[in-house]
Image (cartoon, rainbow, N blue to C red):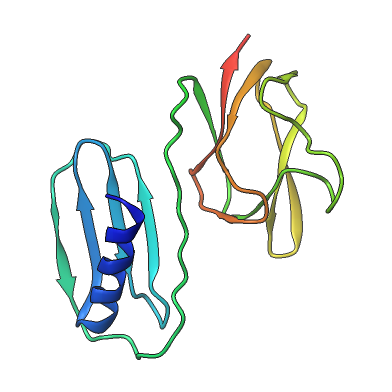
Length: 156
């Protein structure tokens, strides 16, 4: 599904009585929710499930801006490092500072990979084993969910 189709679907759902919508096929998953006042959109690779029907509930109030978050599944093979908490992902210790790690870096067990801020507490996420960073999946300054992939690594 391309971004134009997704935007049209969001507009349609925003004007309808649909509160939540979920669609999944072999290659992608789409979830749109009007929980609270703001529509939320997430798209990622599907775990091989079929279409899930939309749930009908009362419409959200009109006139609110839409919040869009995209979480793409990693396209690189390797071991996924997942966020242990819900929070905001930061690749560096402070704005303007160099990132803790970059793609291609070799890291040792216990080395800091990133920070996930939760409730004004900066939680350093450390490598559990020696590895090479294959891909950074999370976006700097963007929210991450518990269990969401933030890095793809290759153990060494």
